[in-house]
Image (cartoon, rainbow, N blue to C red; front, top):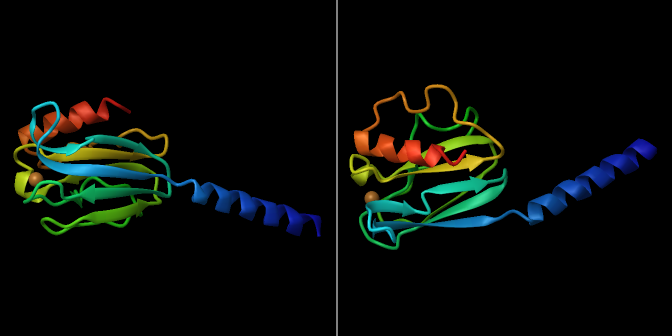
Length: 143
Ligand SMILES: [Cu+2]
């Protein structure tokens, strides 16, 4: 009986936590507020499991998709179409590298950290364009 009560309380606590989940809005831009071309803004988000990320097609010609080499084990990949607003809820802890396919070579990338995490070994070891790599490195500096 006591155990059942404790389980019930744990459930309530969990549900309460989920109700506080945040939504982060990321704009896809031709030019960032810092003058950089082809950017996600903000380019780094520190989130918690269960938080939602919404990619807004503020400017045309962009998409948001997770790089297949840069997502935590067990996470479901996402891939938006060009000009499409994408909303994803991230439940799996880890580091997610997001790219805009048409502007990947121009460094249009961003990083989402879910939970208190570090980038795994070899996160940037795949085939990453130079400009994208530079920006990823700067973003990972926030961890
Ligand atoms: Cu783009």
